[in-house]
Image 1 (cartoon, rainbow over the protein chains, first blue to last red):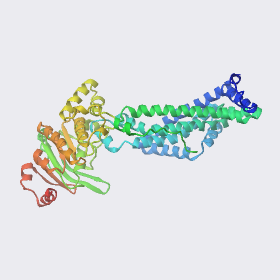
Image 2 (tube, each protein chain N blue to C red):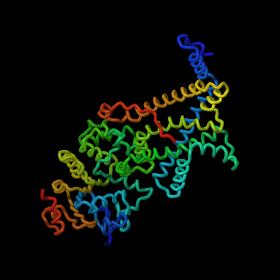
Image 3 (cartoon, chains in turn yellow, blue):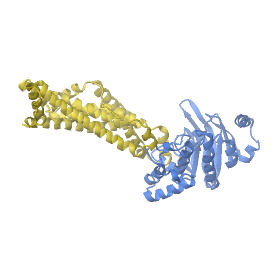
Image 4 (cartoon, rainbow over the protein chains, first blue to last red):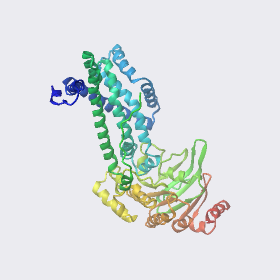
Length: 255
Length: 253
């Protein structure tokens, strides 16, 4: 038991026992698997969510009417209903139409679809941040529409969307706890199970909480690096020198 | 107006009876205009007279409702998938420069030659540097647009257009957004190109500059061409009363 390696002789017995159990949980196979599952859910849901969001934003920008109706309906539905509802709906209703997905697949699909609706708005704001003037300038030198998108709009939109996307990543990490309702063995479900076997909620939940905070911290660190990469390359020195050191605190709106 | 079959040998742009409107607002009314090869045409007129819209129709940034515009004798269709082919051959310089903010000066210039013409990167950069020499700011090659003054940005914008080796250059109020001390450098570049034989259409309010470079002067008002004459006639006062009123207004200072 790894917890026994640490010496807590100066603390009173109850606290020592609690800390020992928390550390045991943290390094237990059960928690490691669960943390891996939470991370996997987050990354898979964000990957497909961002893909969906980008496609939707480009459709909205280039404006085919029929497609526009479809994506507007999609955004309306997935922003307008709770994520929890969507997870339960996909898990329980799709089988009635002969679509049988594992609980992981249903959870990841629901989260990705939910995320796509939000990310599309972020992506759209990013695309719109590149003004008509630059687009026309790019057209005037002979670029085709997709080249304007690829070489002029997307590279500049990326700078705008990184901070809110980082936000969404951290939000998704926490949102992923919802799929515990369809029995995906992620952190919250495993912590809850551990606690209900011995009624030691403090220890079981603290261990899960530590994992969430560690992941959040890592995400923020990665976001900082990506921002640096996206801006640093072409941000004029004068601006960088004068810019206040803005460390973004991970924050996401409650849903 | 009937069309002389040989006219397209002489003229790079031939516009006939062009009408254009934005919704209910008619911005071009029955505009007919020839631009001869190697000619420098200056278009003046009050704001809202349709002069910017007219030149934007030449490179298909705007479509027209009726009439026809020919470029080297070929009818310019309305904006479609092939519009880029027309635009590739016509350079345009904008009032607000519109440099690509994420690219260095040199990359701004080489991007289109590389992605549109498929030019080798090294060749494009060599050519880009030569163009920066021409507009007299080679030392800014690695700078980003935001680090440049307005006048420098506009000269880069000119170099960016020239990199595509256009047959016609359109300037849409190239100095209107500049501080007064920046205007001269930009106009000098435009004048030099014009003297080297670049066919140019300049929409501007700089009458002193117009007098220096124009072969032909066009005065537009309310979407119509009110005056289209040689620069000599125009500046010697052989103009209509409406044109004279306008000239008196802007020449007062």
